[in-house]
Image (tube, rainbow over all chains, first blue to last red; front, side):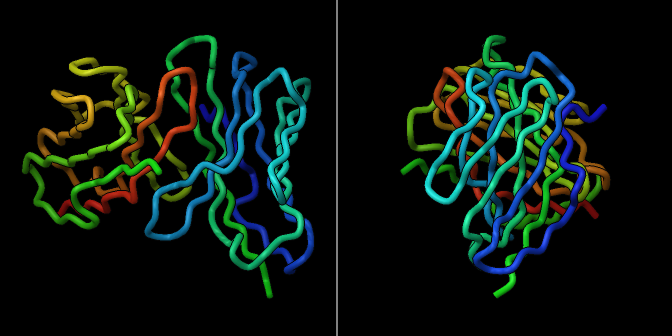
Length: 114
Length: 112
């Protein structure tokens, strides 16, 4: 049972435009969400996170939006750059449980076209 | 900068062998994790540890065990390797209180 879902395996965007990556979750106990970026032959690197007490968090070109009622989060990258081409994973955890376990989605491969 | 080092980038082993994957972090992190990454399945948690000599099962612990004798080192053991354990293995570490996990570059393990 996939508790965190990324329904788009791939996405192509023109350089300079907005990239929107989506993630849905089913467990209403999740209260902390993260996005990771992964280049080939490297480990995932942390990008941005959001707590369930917020609905938006911004860091430079990256913004994460959280819609708790829809159990949906999205990552916006503006403007997109060729170096953003990578696989993006969303992850969720139950902060209050104290286990610090992440449940990851299956990833979305973003290709930014020059 | 946090450094998580996995001992091998590529490893080829035979079915039935006992396989050790080593991971070392240099930031005195309490938490350490082992994942495997497979196409279409994302990252799945195998085992994790909150402290020295502590271990907890993740979502897919069958066929694996772990060892954490020192705070900086977390080892993943495949007791008797099988072909379905061919995968990319990723180690991560973090501070407590849900701080982001930092990942190593992975070990691509092939079981023949």
